[in-house]
Amino acid sequence: MRKIIHIDMDAFFASIEQRDHADYRGKPLAVGYPGARGVVAAASYEARVYGVRSAMASKIALRKCPHLIFVQPRFDVYKSVSRQIMEIFHEYTDLVEPLSLDEAFLDVTENHKQIASATQIAREIKQKILDTVGLTASAGVSFNKFLAKIASDYKKPNGLFVVKPEDAERFVETLVVEQFYGVGKVTAERMHRLGIKTGADLKQWSEQGLVSNFGKAGHIYYQNARAIDDRPVEWRRIRKSVSSETTFESDIDTYDDLLPELGKVSREVIEYIHKKNFKGRTVNLKIKYADFKVISRSKTFPAPVTDYEALYKAGSELLKQVDLSHKVRLIGVGIKNIEEDAGWTGDTQLRIEFKEDEIS
Image (cartoon, rainbow, N blue to C red; front, top):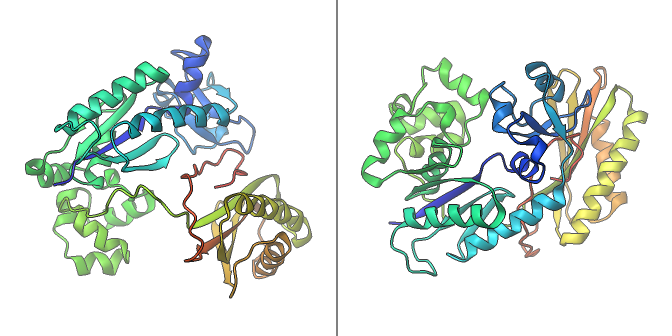
């Protein structure tokens, strides 16, 4: 049986800012931009008491916590700390699957230090992180990725929780569906309408019934309700898409005004794929309207899209298919459908919407 650890740093960006600035410690803090279109990237635990959460609009966060301190992100610092943490993981195993700058799965079934107990390894890693970078992490330990991920969230912050094989199904039955990895707000609401509120409720459904209601994800929900997850820890992850998006200071509703913004994000994508030697054939256009409704349009080409002119032309043609009778607050463009012979394996990229103009 495999031994899987999931490590998740506690309020990573915010904790780094509090570590480096004594004036921020013990105070509600958000990393991000406080402007009208700003978004909270990370919130300290003091801010979370007021209901401030990551991905929340800054203006809403300030309404919940008027004395909230906003700090602009320092990505170079966060990436540097992340590299230090990843080096600690690799002291124990080469089977490390980063999910973002601040979390990763580790398969320690066989490990460099020949430690039999995954729980002991998790404790050592947590202590080494604290000693090395001065930050706390939470760890989940179990025999598959699904359970380890949930376990790491179970006693945050600075927690350690173990789900043993003999306890697994009973543990899953007690969970509310919102705790299931991959079940977001919309899916949870759909489940609630079907009378599915807990893992025990989910377990009562047949696989066919779940697939009928939730598509391919139904297969996963069926297995997870039974504590089953056969996914390996993928130590070499192939990037499947590259995208960039931007939110406007004022909403836009004309094709001509959107084109320069399309050009901006297209150039960012092309610069990134040249740097990483990424290849993809499908161009995807994303539009978010003023009412936050999101639509997308895509087109697949016979050869990889690798230059700015081709991407911009494809994006502008897709834009012509978009209804512009409503104002637009965000535009994004991306390339996906990685070529089989590209052979690129890269660092996991962190997708965060600050001003919503980051490469993701």
